[in-house]
Image (cartoon, rainbow, N blue to C red):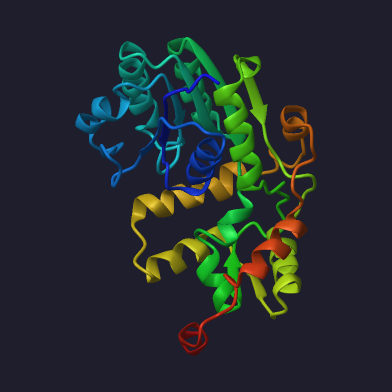
Length: 283
């Protein structure tokens, strides 16, 4: 087996961690975690760290933080991919945003720079409810969000990671754009209700306007640039453009995408949604 030398940017994040784990289990020894705490460290905001992280690698999984939608993303991706190509990176797999026109600019940069590329598009992850922004609200038993009627095909990070691994290791995925979705559409209230059922707890959903949601974030002193990004995702990405499902996960992996209910049952069994006494008191 050819042992590819693969750099995983965002290697401690929701998909990057899973990709690294899968590659290691498959016997690939030259997997480098690209993160601020990596060896060597990698920081998107510090280009001086890029070359050392790239050195000796021949493939890269690109996840950009905080999101490809931010105004500076295209310039940063242009600089990184040019440096990577000039330093021996032949294959690039980009995690892109489904339905994000700004992200498509970054996709084009990767396509024109890399010798071999695959684009993996996804939108809202199942794991946003268990490993990210919505977890505190789930634990508190009260989720308040805008766009309560918007339909989203929530996608599981395990499925995304499996597709990325296939793209990194198998050249049949070169030149492909995959749009990954779960197998059915759900609103946020419906997703929260399935979590409530899975963990046997009452979790309320409150519909907010975009203005109310932004005001709530400011109460918690959330930075304005993050509020901008959240508003972008709720206005642009949840406007109905992604209210459809694809079979790309099945096409790549030969199996169906994980359903949200299965994700909810598996996650509830880990205890991550069981509030601690401190959480209960705080709520």
